[in-house]
Image (cartoon, rainbow, N blue to C red):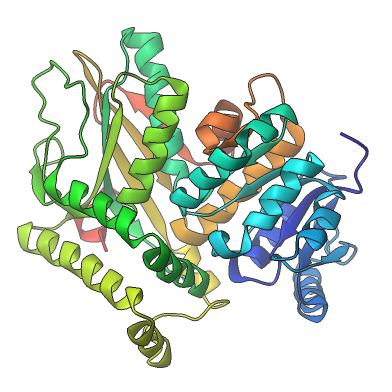
Length: 421
């Protein structure tokens, strides 16, 4: 790689997540890290830079001196000009199926690593099919899915698969995840991406919903440990002693972890299923129907626009307050099945998962690509576990993220049924 002007470019710096990622890097990147910020509107980016510089005048990475790069995400020439100036791009500009393709193409061709927080797994698969061979030849790492969807499930399964190989000497066949505690907000950008995904990927996503509802998203190789893995989405979990309902991110996380399982050879027919804990069976059914109802409202542009008009959902660029994000948390319980053994994992975070934790995940992914690169990295277009797995896992643990595995259930501070929201 030729000498670049910058170590990391934050692309989409004026958005709700992008501006907070700039702040995170200014406060947490190593001294001397060259950070640039970019987007399509110079005046808005200058306003974000000035606001953050006033808020953190003594930040280790000077906010006031961060260079600004301007471009249109859908303009190939702009994206090449931008990608050629930096070693790593951290992109928060979605929906990625609309605004991400030209950036990925430019990064692959300009030999620039890139990470993003898309949850659009079908789009990532499309980019992998079309550009992966070239990315491998150029030794480029395009690391997608670096947000709350899908870091906890993705790196959690990587952790369990490695434990199974090293301590049990058996392949990992199936992991059952359960969100046992969560509090967090949602931004307009996330809702816009959801609406776009429902529109262009309705058929594939509906197949995933039906698989989750029927309990058919189970391993091809069933464990011989007497544990039942073929469960409908609304069910009583004997291990946790709680009812389970549909979880909105389960389809995305299932697709990402299965992909990683194939690439990293977790075990024959490896599968992942995920649900959300409820207070009782009625709440489990209600939350399941609620997610389906929200998806239906977001699918049609007329009802989606009505929700915006009524302020029932935030518009792009809007999101929860800093105070609310600091009060957030999540706890993901993992039950892992090898051929004869059952063991457990815990992944948790102490702030809003969709924003504070996601910003941490993306920021550390960018820093990992910029400064931790070694022979363990796998070039291509992949989920985090495949591309930069253990290095990123180490970074997140050092930042206070819980990724633990044991033979017994691991308690966590947020495992209270009354905190499931």
